[in-house]
Amino acid sequence: MSGPGGVRALRAVARLGGLAAVAAAGLSLSGPAAAAPWCGSPSPVDRPAAVAGHQIRVVYAFPSDGADESAAFAARISDDVDAVEEWWRVQDPARAPRFDRALFPCGAQADVIAVRLRRTGEELRAEQDRFPTIANLVSDAVEDSPYLKYLVYYDGPLDGDEICGQGGGSFGGAGVAVVYVQACADEPTAVVAAHELLHALGALPAPGPPHACSAEDNGHTCDSPDDILWPFATLVPLPALFLDVGRDDYYDHAGGWPDIRDSAWLRRLDAQVSLALRLQGRGTVESNVPGLECSADCTSEWDAGSQVTLVATPGPGQVFARWSGGCAGRAPSCSLTVAEPMSVGAVFGPTAFPVRVSIAGRGTVRSTPAGIACPGACAGRLPSYTRVRLVAKPARGWRFKAWTGVCRGSAARCTLTLEGAARTRASFTRVRPS
Ligand SMILES: [Zn+2]
Image: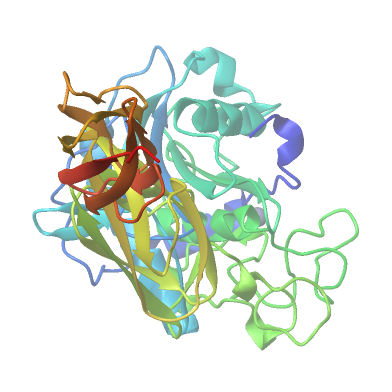
């Protein structure tokens, strides 16, 4: 994001000291994940996404002078991502956060990116400005894109451990959730992640929610401590908490204010459509919205109604020829709405095709662009998938009669779009003396 201004609200989860001691005994950490245990490896760069659409990138971040413990943390982060997704589906079977997942040997798992921040642990220790600084450092290091929000696990020293996490963002734009792994040791990090993620998605939407805690704290709800957006950590495991108790403040509510359920970062499990891509020749097709990056036939699943722009890039020695199916034309980009299952073809081919010209009678044939100048150079290569022209010119005492082969007719100019090797013959006849 461009600057701290992109983050609308910063909401801390403060720990109630008294409650911590009471509840700690019965605490179980982040609920079991339905998905396979982590089998991947953290990476400093994003891997191709196994999900299509606006997505939440998952980051392990540590200070410039800190140790990279990403290998040790990744499994826990992956478990949290699975737990948050599973919890969300229980709360709303038709929605799930679209976390960035990559394909690993055991299936699609959280694509945990490890980021060494360009600030020391000391520089990030103080609460003042810590959140916007981390948010900006992470989006700068990974990718600044209108389609991305971030879930960040920050592993650095903190002044105090009262704040378990922070999150902020706008409903339709940038958003970052930060879990402070060195704070709130007894609070399940999956709870912190889900809570801050809601802030990153734009909760609470203002104005509107009737149970916003107060004018000063209008980012949390205060109608129930069982609500995930209760302002204090309660050491209750995620499965025991609720997404908008009463459904009247921020999720699936009947009010006129924005509804987090409509967020573009939530997968619509009840409205998935497939987009199949068929590639001919060598090249790649990528989408502007993350999720499609194909160098062979591929299929991706999208929320119905997704607006996607596809861009075709030819491989070495190839050109993009044309689209087919759901896209048309020869321009390398194609915008479409994935409203129903659809198929798009992209054709790539060599940059030029051989052309052979022969002449009957006496005259010449030349090409634009140059390549054929017959007689002399009657065989050559002309650019593919673009308009080329052959012009027949009779010798003195002769006139042009007709083309045969790929060119037809009796006009001396022949315009072609080569989609393969081509042959043509130009016939001239002697002019009869009158
Ligand atoms: Zn909060």
